[in-house]
Each structure stands twice: as structure tokens, then as C-alpha cells.
Amino acid sequence: MREAAARRCVAVLGGSFDPVHAGHLALASYFAKWLVPDELRILPAGNPWQKPALGASAEHRVAMARLAFGGLAMPVVIDEQEVRRDTPTYTIDTIRELRQELGGDASIAFIIGADQLQRLDTWKEWRSLFDATHLCVASRPGFNLDAASIPAEVAREFRRREASADQMRGSPHGLTHIATALQFDVAATEIRTLLQAGPQETAKPDAAAQAQLRRLLPDAVLDYIKQHHLYENEWTSKNCKPSSSTPSKT
Ligand SMILES: Nc1ncnc2c1ncn2[C@@H]1O[C@H](COP(=O)(O)OP(=O)(O)OP(=O)(O)O)[C@@H](O)[C@H]1O
Ligand SMILES: O=C(O)c1ccc[n+]([C@@H]2O[C@H](COP(=O)([O-])O)[C@@H](O)[C@H]2O)c1
Image 1 (cartoon, rainbow, N blue to C red):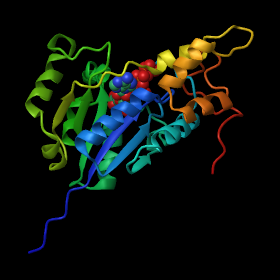
Image 2: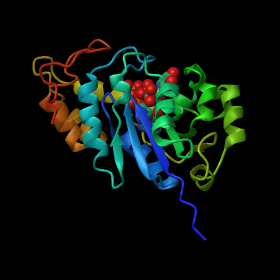
Image 3: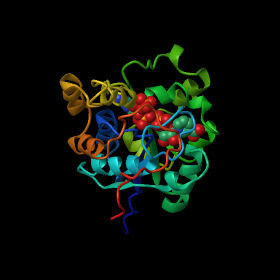
């Protein structure tokens, strides 16, 4: 008798990654261990419509994501579909694209942190997400996962769909998991602030900020930020165009 082919499982982590930091790596690594997917798909957001502004161009954010996630010991794909799109970045559009690409049978699991769970009901067509993907959520310091912090309807959906890793790998979409063990206290906002925390005349972070940055960012990402003088000034516009320091295409 022929053995049934195993269902392909793809874990997806989307983000503004402005810049990518150790919290993103911890989040991806956590679910890589929990779900054991065949692939980790990283999706830098082109136009994250709920963020007031961005500090680096899409090209730089993609380049930093490549440096950061390329070091993980698993198959990683940096998917640029969202930065190629002109429209606001809606996850439902992206997941539908992914479905087309991966087929109806693949198990797709979209990963978010607790802050996004708290506002999931503001996402475009959030209920439709369950028809196309699983949703995996991780705790994050500063963002409660208790009943009072999650919109009631979102909490209800998550409760009735809660599943094990085996169940998620074994079906294409519609299941959820909330992991409460991750406690990595870092945000991109904090990193952008640290990068500006130097004497005005030097525009360089002081020694304490420097040590903190080394702890919160992969070395290659910090080196890249310095090489391209990213985040040295106040906010640039949201759709910031690549500057002269845009990475060359290789
Ligand atoms: N420290 C963290 N722990 C758990 N999840 C995180 C952490 N940092 C980011 N995430 C999750 O990663 C995804 C992408 O996050 P994003 O790129 O917006 O980073 P951020 O640190 O939240 O940025 P910002 O401070 O600019 O809002 C989101 O789903 C977010 O919840
Ligand atoms: O689909 C939406 O409406 C939507 C609203 C807010 C956030 N998202 C997605 O959630 C992921 C994390 O977003 P962010 O803003 O925390 O970087 C990223 O992939 C975003 O595109 C998606």
C-alpha cells in the first residue's frame, strides 16, 4: 500500500521589522520548535496601515530580515510579495496569495504576538482568516492575554479552535494556539529610540545604549543599520523612498 504524502506545513511571520530584532527571532524560533514546520516564511510588510510611520524603507527592512532570519537552522523564505503591492498590507490578501501558491492542502500557520491578538478584530476581514490559515499567538511582556484584554469575539474563536501542534500540522487552516511561555521584552520602537540616544553633535548611541543594542539586535543587523545610517533622524515618512544608502541588488 502506498503511504499518504505528508501535508506540507508553512509557518508565516509577518511584520514591519523596523528593524527586525531579537524578539522576532525568539518568536519565530519558539514556533519553529513547537510546530516543526517544513518552512518558515517571513513577510516584511509593505504598507503596515496601522503604523503611524516607518523609519526605514522596504528595501532596507527586507535586507535586515534576510540577515536576521538567514541564520536560523531551518528552511527560511523571505517573501517580498507585500512590499511589491501598492495597497495597504492586509494579511487576508497575503494568505489568499499564499494559498494559491501552496495549494489547498498545505497547513499554513500565521504567527503573531499578544499585542496583535488584542487588536485582531481591527484587521481586514479578520474572521475570514480562519478559512485560510491557522493562527499562532505568543505572549509578549506588557500585553495581557487575559479575558479582559482580548476582544470577546476573538477570545471565543480562539477558545473553540485551540489545537495541538499535531492537529495544526494535520489540517490546512482554522485552528489556533496561544503560547504563554515567551517573555522577550523588546520592541522596535525601543530600538529606534536607543539608536537616537546619543549626544546631538555625534548622533551616535552612547555606550549604555550601544550595549543594549548588541543584546537586542543580531550583530549583522546592527552593523547594517550603522553602515546605512538608519534611524539616525526622527521619523521619515511612512512610504519612505529608498535613500542613496539603499542596498544594491545582488
Ligand atoms: N518581543 C516580542 N514578543 C512577542 N512577539 C513580538 C515581539 N516583538 C514583536 N512581536 C510580534 O512580531 C510581529 C511583528 O512585530 P513588529 O515588526 O511590529 O515589531 P514591534 O517590536 O511590535 O514594532 P514597533 O515597536 O515598531 O510597534 C507582531 O505580530 C508582533 O506582535
Ligand atoms: O490585515 C490587517 O488588516 C492587519 C492589520 C495589522 C497588522 N497586520 C499584520 O500583522 C503583522 C504584524 O504587524 P505589525 O504592525 O505588528 O508589524 C504584519 O504581517 C501585518 O501586516 C495585518
